[in-house]
Image (cartoon, rainbow, N blue to C red; front, side, top):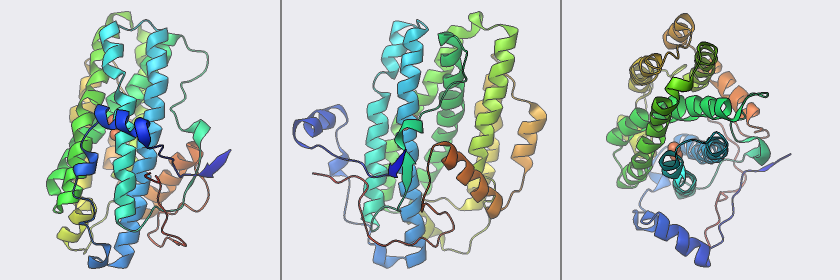
Length: 315
Ligand SMILES: [Fe+2]
Ligand SMILES: [Fe+2]
């Protein structure tokens, strides 16, 4: 059942323990990004982007929790499971940072989500090892591996100290999240039969199709580069060009070394597809609908904010 995407913050000793695990977020230069300095429509769009960021970080946390269980059930190596043990805390920090950026700009975009459908759901009828293989390929080898160079480039382009600090903090954690996928594949490689490699190729293709939302429909903009990068975006044309280089170099070529080959023709089509803003939004809505998101989440930049509400109510 869907409900408003608003998250709670307990404070007190829960907060102290969390801060001990992941220190420093209160030291970022909060209160320095003045929304009145930017065009209102762009600020609304940025509030949507950061809200969406918080939502996707939350989904990744749920998927990493599912992955941990599958790795434990599959008898994955102790150190590999231990390495992944704190990734949920990383993602909760990213949820917090994205939420605080949305609030810095005036509040979150209204959004409803089904919290029981946020995690990647492995196909039915699989063994524990096959479940872990599937989630690893989807979440770590495609999703997290894609986000590392993309976030890095966005951080390098960022011009405002707060935006830079937030992206810097997030990108630091994503490297190990991606690395887990490749270390796991090194471990599991000798156990992968021909059919399982073929199946994982199809899993990877679907995951690439999902992330292709990110580059399809990126169109030139006449917004000043400094405004874009203050609010947390890269120039869309450079972003799309980088994304098209990242997929073969960081995802499909490394996967192929493990005999996992997403259909080259389909990948090529996804990379070449010029797409349009309408395509991009249709794809985005489809992936959000898959995660149970419904309601007044809108991507056309004309959001109707009735209240400037926080996502996380910090105690
Ligand atoms: Fe994250
Ligand atoms: Fe991550």
